[in-house]
Length: 259
Image (cartoon, one colour):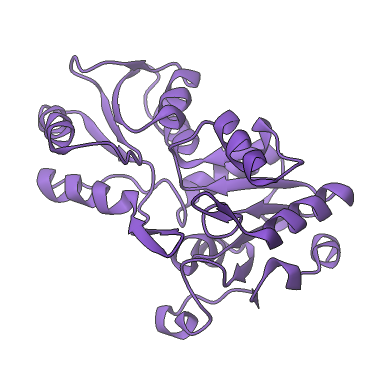
């Protein structure tokens, strides 16, 4: 049986508002023993905070072990680069901090080996300038993801990728690509699920991240028009999902899982 890799922002909810079809999709998968994980570029929350965020909206059948975020993938990526480098500084919130601690990193501004950039809606100019100083002093830039924009009720917000690009431009050095649509976050999710990519299905609202992750890595995709992109964007972006739906209510998850 295939494992569903559900996106969060724009697929399960928009900001504090649940997408009701997402609740029904998760409940259906749980009731029919269809395995699933939540795969998100949003690094702000810990898995435990994700559970609370979703249960407060009315979700059930969600547990901390069901989440893989870009902070987890970024910490996993950096931990494998050099076992002797475990000093890090970060812009981010609890999800980033927990992911670094879980991989054995010390968070310090004393000549860190890495500066991690995760989404932090409270970060200011002084924080950005402090990060820049450490990067210019030799720390490696690691952005958790390159999302340009995020869906929210009534519109969009600046994504973490716009902030990462700020640092890439200021330092003249690129960040490795970690989050969707790039391979490291998929590898982390597949490892957690104990499956190969042939047994995964990526489900999301963003053609440039969710669908492109599958399209670029030969993983089956479902594109749902509940967030960032609409069907008219497919030809413009030249990113082609395997299945396009208006709502998760339109997906036959049982058939999909057993195909």
